[in-house]
Image (cartoon, rainbow, N blue to C red):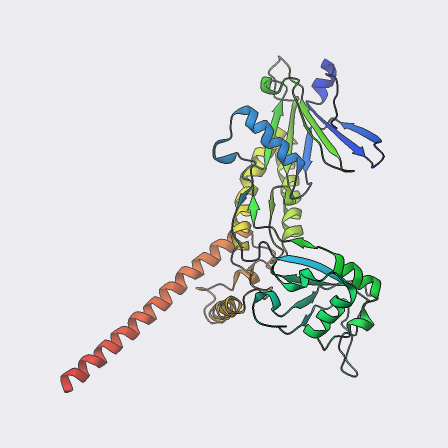
Length: 402
């Protein structure tokens, strides 16, 4: 089903050129409609954003959809994209090891439970459970299982079978003591989720004015399935042609404008930066949306694009999906770490370390990483050339001696 509404009076148009309806439905068919008339609508509704989809529809009606449109998601490739994950609940501060007198895995600490391969091939590759730190010492811990989609663990749906597979992979862990049968049953039955490929849309904002005749009294309705909300957004046009105060804006932040695997732990951080940047441009422009939102996009878009690039190479091999690539990544990390300490004015640390420096933007991190890469090429190219010259001279001297 979809929602509808009548045209507003002229006074309402002056106050709110944008109308948003949220329709909540339940399984019995009942619904509740909430109507809002904001001057600024912030789309923070995640990777499958209905707000972004609506902007794509509006852009299509405007005829400005070359190259897929500003609000179409453009995907990059990461080796971590497509990996499957699910979460096993553990007790607070668990004593996981079967060894006597083993210390607990305290909630504020990071831990990895490493398993062994159950056979040949990626479908039986060694599993690992990652425990992220939790500040609350009394909270339950969560252990993240992340594998390739073809791993045999995804074929196991029974409680006893899951106990058996985890115990064979990680015999050092006391799964039957740590995890109650009902919790293991939930874990076995869970289909989990998948990491998205790094993706972003180029457009971060959309301005609507009272003089926008293209959207005069038109409606776009997006209906979700089941109990979820439906979004009904329309503009109310006017013959005045004024852009202020009758200007409304739509802004995308967080996963609504870009999504990626959790390799660098930057999802929440980048969304908070979005909010901080928005506050700054609103203050700078005196809350003039016609100036603030384009300025926001101009300032923020390069850093979001840089973050998406970083996600393709910074640390995508940490999930043990390819031990050879992980080993090569470790060598690269070690080289950059050593050279950045020996010659800090010339070489920078690995991007995985740089993103943790709070005063560096994502674009600065990307630029520093590329600069170091070019210098490494020059360094190793020079070394290879020097070795070739020395070897060539040695071979020439041997030939002359003979």
